[in-house]
Length: 404
Image 1 (cartoon, helix red, strand yellow):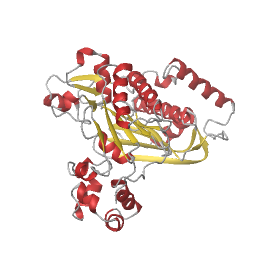
Image 2 (cartoon, rainbow, N blue to C red):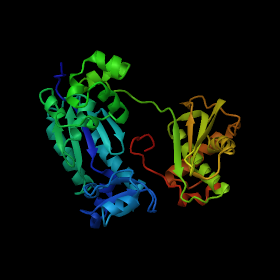
Image 3 (tube, rainbow, N blue to C red):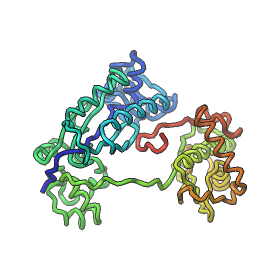
Image 4 (spheres, one colour):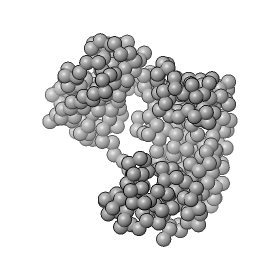
């Protein structure tokens, strides 16, 4: 039985967001293959690509030097976070004007829930209006996909049917015919691992997935409640309307050179600690644990962690723990990372023994954060990281809007 409720969920997805934004702001890039990168080196990975580049075989995650061979004339543009934040805020303001229940799933995707909000307009009409407002309020090169469905899964699926600039609706009446046009891995959430599980029992198409009984999915394929959720999700019933809590806050960095000294590497680790500390406090969280890792040129993975009895929140506390752990890291490092875990709400302002003992440090850390918010990232930072900003640059995450 499929969910025959009126489709009241809308998914809006900007097309190749970062690349399109750059083409909007730089008219000479329009119609040309563009790749967004985080660092100006030929070995850097591509963050996103324009549709012109995608048509030539360029894919996200591909090294720029490899992509340039596929797409002669490929233009590499270094990412510009402030520009993307501006568009994110504009998109969010547009969506919020249509429904009181909007969730930004990522910097380029938003979900609107129209349940209980009677606007006497069809969602198709609203979808076309959102498309026009993007062009009117941001720029004529801005395009988005709009999907409408009875649940979040079907709305997102609909938004991916006709890229770029599509608008589709999935209902109980056309659900099967839509699935017939898709591959199993076209379904959001079905990556290689889940795909293997499904194919192992003969489920190799979305239609077979749809027709599978709940017991098979729960007991044999997914071995848990996930199977029951997929049975409902595919039929248009909502199982994804839940808030995800922040469990960890972290950053990683691929070293720009392979011959950096230990002092230079630890300075970059310090930079990551400052970034993680700011993110932690922006979520009003305290941490009790620090995890650090390193990947080596010889393909080895090293990691270490420490859990503390009392929580901490300052850059100094995080860096003290990280540097202590990192002292045992191997040589020939090519990538480093840090993650704070054991998070708790910043309500009682407990002070740790690692630099947060004095209450005045709370005021100092807060004042530094306020200055950086007002005058720009890293207006005030440790002298040890004075030269690292050239290399360790702020990134804009696709999958999270927590720090925007």
